[in-house]
Image 1 (cartoon, helix red, strand yellow):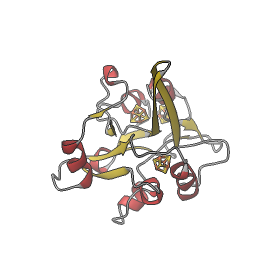
Image 2 (image 1 turned 135 degrees about the vertical axis):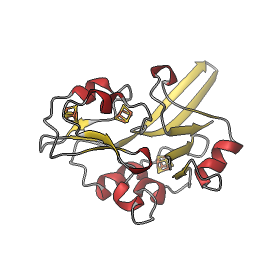
Image 3 (image 1 turned 180 degrees about the vertical axis):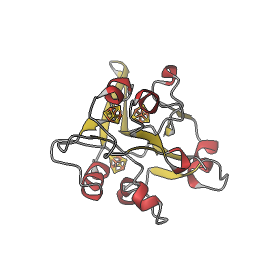
Image 4 (image 1 turned 45 degrees about the horizontal axis):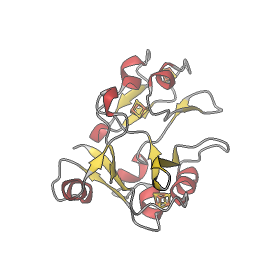
Length: 177
Ligand code: SF4
Ligand code: SF4
Ligand code: SF4
């Protein structure tokens, strides 16, 4: 089992409902976020293109944050989801420095926090909160090893990319382009 998420950049409207849903579901403290929306422009005037992306931890298959954690707090859970065990975290910040995606923050209670693909919901057979609330239904989540999962089907049908592939982190967050 390999959990993955694909986000359709052609359908995302940048409404940030995914950010708000995450903050409520995961009790993210005010001023911090586990997911965020990026508006990236490319090209030169008058031929400019705008890409809107909802970003979060890439749940990397080759995660530097797991490799560098001195206490084993950052670890792999089922389906390759990268988690932080708050009880083992000493707040050294090594994982924050190692993440090419700037996906982690220090929780005011002293441990490091980030997106978990809402593992508490996934374990109950539910979708991550962001996927559930997205008004344009542009996010797809599931098991990449299941060829019938929505995410596997979308990745087969559509051109897609990952962010900073040159970092060699094997991201499990895909963007349909
Ligand atoms: Fe994009 Fe959906 Fe997030 Fe809105 S809720 S910003 S449409 S991914
Ligand atoms: Fe770790 Fe960053 Fe990859 Fe998430 S995106 S698994 S925090 S290296
Ligand atoms: Fe591990 Fe916590 Fe240090 Fe990050 S801050 S590397 S999770 S002990």
